[in-house]
Length: 102
Image (cartoon, rainbow, N blue to C red; front, side):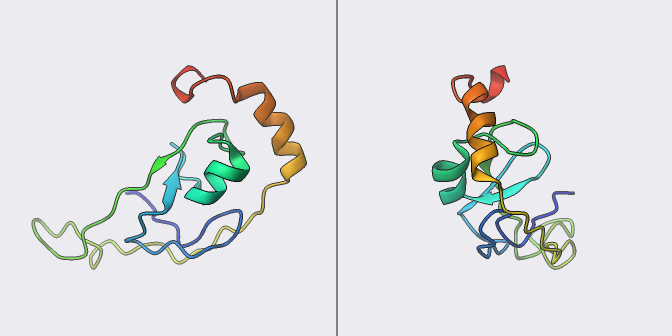
């Protein structure tokens, strides 16, 4: 089950379950679109993967109890700001490789 983390790991911006601004990597590291684009360069600082838009979990029980009321978003904040200098070095080795080639 996708965790739906509540905030950006870098800037701590709130990312509620219905946020269109949330981005995740394949390990569910969660950042806002601005941090992914302007700080991280679409390279996850934790794994080196790329980011995609986080899916929206339905808020209503449309079918089969698959909805936010049954499977709520996480409330555990993972605020761990990225060391921008260290990430710049990491980014320099990966930025020219598309995510599917990393």
